[in-house]
Each structure stands twice: as structure tokens, then as C-alpha cells.
Image 1 (cartoon, rainbow, N blue to C red):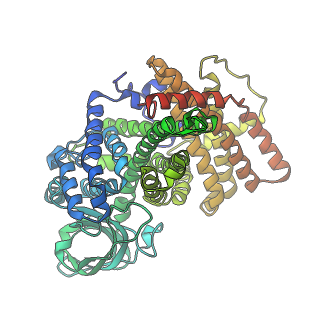
Image 2: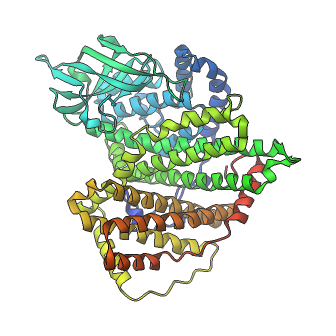
Image 3: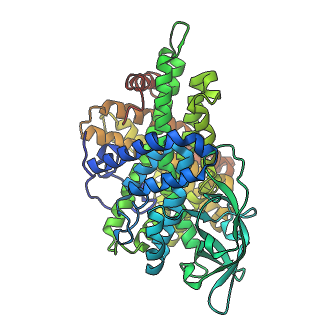
Length: 596
């Protein structure tokens, strides 16, 4: 199996994949992992299987001493410091490595939440935005597991509207701040020692602070009774006249949104990876169960209905896996191409902001594909999937919050086209001229189709058409609503669905093309997965585009737009039944996800 990194390429800006081509030999895929990547993945997998899972019952009984032990064990394995410079006891590895660790943590979602609270939501904001003194004081203790961290952003009245926070920080004559307020749904809240807290200085300037429990005046509420993640501590955090030293301001007064949103970008990207890992795990459970469970005298894996489920689970997971690795590769290449001091996190913060669109796509698509896969996992298990004797039931409950974590999927759907529109208006992305050029193309005579008789020729042409469809809908939306586009949430969400499908389909296609170029032993299966995904995406994109156009136009104008859409929607359906059967049979034979 190939273990080489992708070739250097012209660096695409965030969102530029919509209007620029990408070569398959430049895209990061799981097949291009190095030996070091694989060893870290194996280490994390063994840790979860051998050390976390045997403690699951204690975790669900809220034995937080066990969580502390496991966090210290993570620290011994250097799993917390992957994104932190060596100067502060981190290991400074790439974002692909960070993604791999997130994937492997999926098997123990409750502990995965505690892990994320420590690595992503405590260490990362301090490294990205902290002063050298703050980094030296806190990062070695966080990365060693000496102290446990938590991230305090949400409030009862400001979940999705983070900037509407009511928690106040009143500046004192000596430069310190006094915090009062309450935060909700805080992971690690019951036992954390240090908190990244967002509050408004003098009730106006949204800012971030590093707050220690030892400062006094900070208390944890009762543990929430949650649908899932029973082994994760989730409480309110109450601040009553908590005095925070001036040197514990994180970043600048009034710039807390920079801290919050960039950390969320990274969290969304990594959540997509955890969802990908969880889906792979569930496919393994389903394949093994279907092979041994007999009905009507034969294994249920031999039935077409079950093959369809397994095949579709594999196809959708293949798409998510492809897009998160592609995104990790883009982030790493941009960081490497940006001159920076490894001990300064500002360059990484800027890159994370650059790829905020892709991070939101990873979060939305990953969480929804995982929910689909886990629902089918229960269905394949039948009655056994509904009881706690099998892990399928726990996986299902634990995963539901992913569509709420890190900004709801609805908020992220609004952000995806919203961020692209802002970049287009500023001229950072030439989306507007590209949309105008497309309009001229559709009003002109049809162009002759380019010849491409390769295994994925039809799919390449289809993905090009998908991009044009997205440009068409997005361009008309910007033209129709102008500065009021943000108020048209239904149109924005339909546009987001199209953009998500475009990025997913192209990522899967590029991965399959790369597998062919590398002459992978499983190249034909890669082609199968990509072909089914593109086939299914074609139907979804056309439906979403028709719905969006019908909102924005009527009469002759609508008929003209639909005629243009028909020119772009000429993909011929393929026999997905036979292909899904091949994918399902491969999973049953291997006893798990066939692309690992």
C-alpha cells in the first residue's frame, strides 16, 4: 500500500475548489498515510480498546477519577500535544495526525468528549491565542494531564448566538476582571481545573479568559441527565464574583470572537474525523453481525436488502472520509507554505479561518452520515440493536449530539454559503465573475461533450456539472437578494446542501482516481464507491437546485433557469444495486470497512 504524501500543488484557498480544478495526485487520502501516521493510529486504537473500553461502566457511573487517570495516560502517549509546539511540551505534528487520533477516539465517545475538551478546547485556544507567559504556565500542565480543562461558551439564552452572551467581566482599577454569570452544557464541567471562559467586558466587549477553579467563586452545577455520552461530565458553570488576574485575559478585549470561532473551526474539522471513525466502526459491527446472524436458514448478509444497507453505509462513509482527509491535507499544505515560528500559533489560526467552509462541511456531513450509518447498524441488528447488550444502541445515543455540538448543523449550513458570499463580495474568491461566465455559457449554444472514456469519465463530467449547478444557484441567490441574502435561510440551506454534496462527490472522485494512479489492489472498489456516490449526489443536487430556483423565480424566468439546469443535469443513472452488492460482500468477507 502506498505510504507517500501527495505531490506539491497550487494551493487552493478555502472554497476555491468550487471554481478551480484539483489534480488527484495532489490530494491527501487515507491511502497516502505514512508509517508514522499508521503507528499513531494503532497506538490510539489500542489505547481505546484496551484501556478506555474496559472502564466504560465506571465512566458511566461518573467515576471522574478514572477519567483523570485516562487523561494522564493520554498525556503519556503524547496524544494531547499533537497541535502544540515542542517548546511547550507538545509534539508539533501535522493535522492529518490530529485527524487520525480523532477517528480512533470514536469507539469511546464519552471519553472522546473529555479528550476533546482537553486537547481541542483547552490546549488549542491557549496555544493559538495565548501570550508566551500563558503558554509556559498552562500548556505543560494541560498536556501532561496535571490539570483538566473545559470550554465555557454556551449559555441558556445564547447557544447558537454565541455573541449574545450575558456573562459579564467588569474591569477593576488594578487591571483584573470580576466575572459573574452562568455557562451551560460544559463538557468536563464537573471536575475541570481550568476553564476557557467567554464574557463581555463591562457588558459590551466579547472577550476570552483563562479561569482557574482555584481563583474561587466558580462552582459546578449538577450533572445533566443526557440522552447519550453518559460517561462524560456535562454541567453548568456558575461564576460569582470570580476575580481573574489581568494576565489571564486570552487575546485582546473585544476580540473573543476570534478565539471562539477559530477554535470552533478546528473542532468542526476534528468532529468530522471522529464521525468518520465512528461510521467505520459501525460498518464493522454490522458486517460481522450480518455474517453470523441467520434467518430463514441463511446468514442475513446474503439478503439483498441487507447488502443494500451495508453498501450504502460504505459509500457514504467513503465520501466523508475522503473529504476530511482532503481538508487535512489542504490545511497542512497551507501551514507549511506560510512562513511562521512553530511556537507561535497565529499562523495556524489564520489557516483554520481560511478553511472554515470546509470545516463546517466536515461537521455537517460527518454528523449526518454517522447518524445514518448508526441507524442502519441498529436496523441490521434488529431487536438486538435496541438493547444494551450490543453496542449499537450506545453508539446511536452518543452520536445524536454531534449535530448540535460545535454549532448546530443548521447554523453551519447558513455559514457555508454565507462565508463564501462574503469572500466573493470582497474579491477574495472570484465566484461572481465565474457565475457570470456560467450564465453566458448557459445562454449560448450547447458545447460538445469532451471525450473521456476512462473508468470515471462520466463521473468527472458529472462533478464538473455539479460545480456549475452550485455556481448557478449561488450566483442567482446573490443577484436576487444582495445584502439581504442572510435573511433567506431556506435558500441558504438548500445552497449549502448542494455545496456539501459537490465537495463530498469531488473528494471521493479524486480519491478513487488517486487509487487508480497508484495501482492500488482495491482500486476497483474505490471506483465502485465513487461511482455510486456521484450517482446518488446527482439526484440530490438536481432536486435541491430545482427547489431553490423555484423560490427565487417564477413564470418565464423560472422556465429559462430550469432549462439551463437541465443542460447541467444530464447524468445517466448507473446500476447501483450490483455495485452495492460488491461493496457489501467485500465488507462481510473482510469483517469490516473495506478501505482500511
